[in-house]
Figure (cartoon, rainbow, N blue to C red):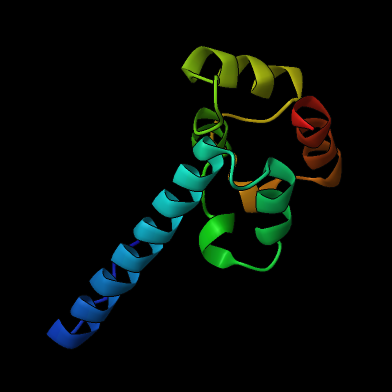
Length: 103
């Protein structure tokens, strides 16, 4: 499937929108790492915020204090979450499992 042609203005607007989304996700992960935000708050926020919903679950877990790549993968395996899953695509049982692990 071919990508649509964008005018220079549309392209610039898309680039700016993507930059804002990346910055928002980075700030959220930083807050999570610092302990200012809980995982349950992030999962709840993802229900209404499209930017947060598009964050990969693995990136979210890796931003938790004390969780690296290996632990994040183990948690995702234990909770039956695909490595490509995004936060907005988590089912209620998967969200509950993650919350029970970290809260």
